[in-house]
Image 1: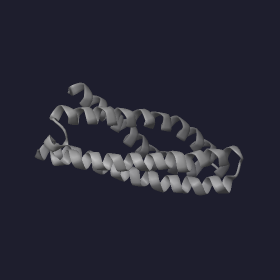
Image 2: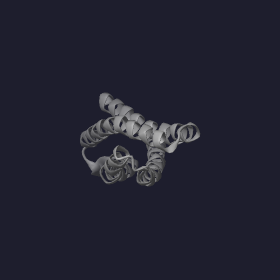
Image 3: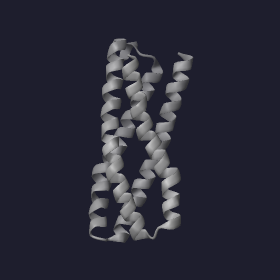
Length: 151
C-alpha cells in the first residue's frame, strides 16, 4: 500500500505543482518579458512538454487510487473524504481532457500558422481552465490531508 500511496502523491505533486508553477510564476513572468508571438511559442512548447507528464500523472493517479480503493474493499468501505477526492479528481481529469483535445490541439495549430490573435484567445481559455484545475487540485489536497487527520 505504501508504494501506491507514494506513486499517487508524486503524480499529484507533478500535476498540481506544475499547474501552480505555470499559472502563478511562469505566466506572469512571460507576460513581463515576452512579446505575444514569443510568448505563444513558449506556451506551445511548455504545454507540449508538460501535457506529456500530465497524461502519465493521470494514469498513475487513476491506477494507484483505484487500486487502493480496491484494497480497502471498494467504495462502500472507504472514508467519505476518499469519495470527495475521487469526485474532484475526475472533474479535474475531465477539464484536462477538454483543455487538451478542445483547446490545446487548436492552439498548437494556430501557433504553427502564426495566427497570433486566435492563438491568444485560445490561450486565454486554457489559462482560465487551468486556474480552475489549480484551485480544484489544491482543494483536493486539503481534503486528503484534513480527511486523513479526521478519519
